[in-house]
Image (tube, rainbow, N blue to C red):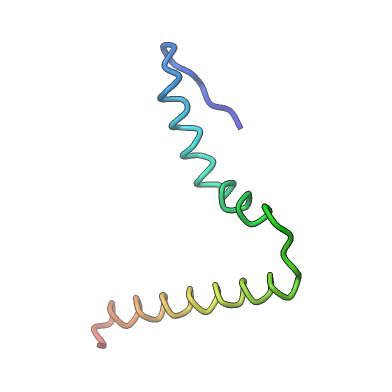
Length: 68
């Protein structure tokens, strides 16, 4: 990963770096890896996330189709 500092503007480069790290999910991964997570807990978390995603997609689809 590379961030270019232009015109000695470190603040702007730092903002760009933070945005890039967030987009790539580095912060989320750091948070998850802060403590050990049992494989069963990981599966449960991922399953719950999948359910949330599916519900959200279904809600969006129904809203788009005009079904309430």
